[in-house]
Length: 316
Image (cartoon, rainbow, N blue to C red; front, side, top):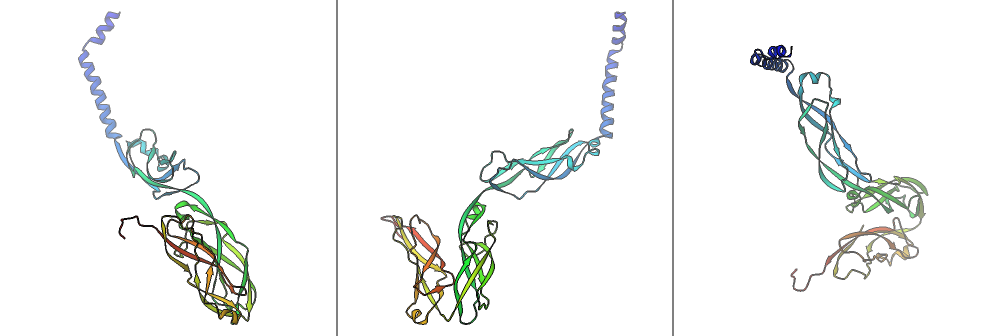
């Protein structure tokens, strides 16, 4: 029995093997012809995974084009929602860096190309800083009236945002419009963060966006514009020299009895400490006013320039 089976299998064995090979080749040809491997491109959103807390993420890339290939029949049962592109920010710290785009594809699909295959991301640490609010008047009160004092509901506030942006904030101000006022009034003013150039800094958050300010007016006082004289301390760090010191504004309008104002041509600031100042900086200081003299805003900004002393033998 076994002998007959072996003879049956071995009879014309070469022809039988050739037939099997041809059958496989024909099957592969038919399948490739009827269900060939094709390529297609999908545009998918870029997902961010494991973004570290306490940082602001900046990533300009929002979409990725995925070029994939697979048997044509597989494309029938899939849609763009089945393809995913993502970046993993695990372990990343502050700064700008390139991150590789990773993908997740349906079974049977092969990635040909991802465009882009890497993206640039920036992680900026979120910080906060406390500022004393400066209140500045705009316009003029009615004839014969001037600001005697004002009482704001907000004196200090916190400004928060990315470290690189917050470093540009030098002060927070609120603008009080006098606009012909002749009686005491209360005004709701907007608070804004400004840079050293006086321009508003965007991208930061103020803990208070507005303040209520009670303004008291005085009548029968004389007004006069005088120069502001910045007074600096003698505690500049060794190895540095003091350059220009300039108040902003350089002049200010004061008010008081006429006989008192006649002898005043300038007002001093409080003494400005230079301790720890090793580069150009700005400081907000209070004016020192004679008794009986008032000013709308007693705070001014002073720009201070310093530079290292030249070493012996160096030429300027």
